[in-house]
Amino acid sequence: MSAPNPDDVRAFLIAHPDFVREDAELLALLARTGGDEGVVDLGTAARDKLLEEVRQLKALNSGIVETARANLATQSQIHMAVLALLEVDSLAALDRKISSRLTGTLGVDVCRLLIEGHAPLRKSESILGASEGFVSEILGDKVERLGPVDPETAHALYGQQGARVKSEAIVRLDFAGHDGLMALAARDAQLFQTGQGTELLNFLARAIERMIIQWLHAN
Image (cartoon, rainbow, N blue to C red):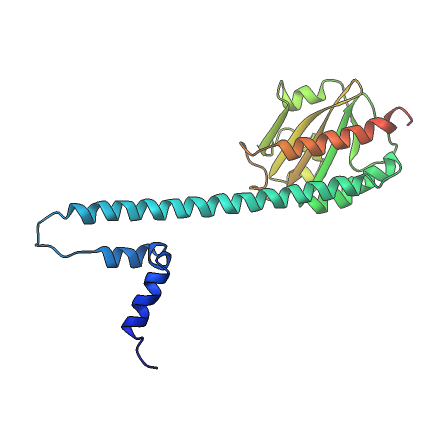
């Protein structure tokens, strides 16, 4: 293979200057100038600092893009989950859908909807009754909690699966005057972490809250 023609290379670089500007290592090589040993080249030092800042900005931009993609994926999962739940025509059907379709769509291992002083279904997997004051025992004065599973409350929330799950997201609910909560838990210890955004989680919780309320007093 013959060597590239210098004139063609020069013409290409003149026509496409971003080819050099966007390649930090190539730009540094072209910008580097020689100097006597022990002499500080302030121009080179300034260029090196600028190039490092460019590298950091590129890394930051990549992180923002990845975060945006992850947020869009999560948003799509939540929307799909809510649409699936809207298809049900009874509280029992909603319970089955939550324990199967919802957990699968969200990638969690267990979901619990607990209602203080009210057990609306004789047999259920996800929509359960709870004693008065249970929500305050779990959340205190908080509206929500995300992070590692609390081993002291894991069994009360998740039953036998409480020993296996590692991270959880809990949101306080109000079922027409009955305090309640939605608890999601996963074996993945990194799925729910303190400081994560909760807008989509709260949207899901409010949607399920409204679905349950319409059947709550009919059971």
